[in-house]
Length: 120
Ligand code: FES
Image (cartoon, rainbow, N blue to C red; front, side):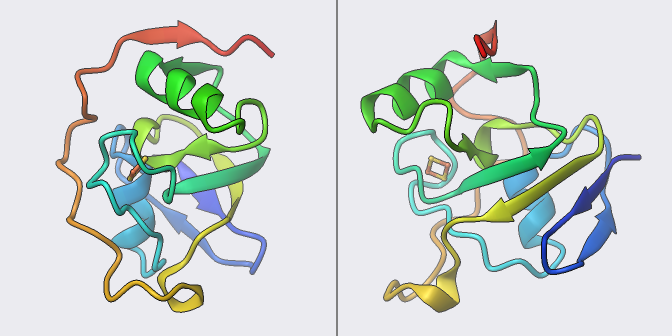
């Protein structure tokens, strides 16, 4: 089972294949997911220091490119937990003015993922 590690020293073991955004939330991280996990808002973005996935969904690639964020961050709603990862959070509910984190994303990645190799 994969281990997720944070810069704050948090470390938790998560169910293999679980969406990263849900793995974070279910382990007490107040990660934002304002669009409900559909690769639209980028509020779920994280920054990897180790274990960045080598694949990404087309939806993630296109959204990050549109927002000028490609190569800098990843969208936790578009990443399955299939290996160990070390990452930091960009947006947390307690550091924002939103009333809530957003609708809970579905268990499966949405939109239906089309996988491409990360080009860097
Ligand atoms: S892009 Fe909106 S929750 Fe991931």
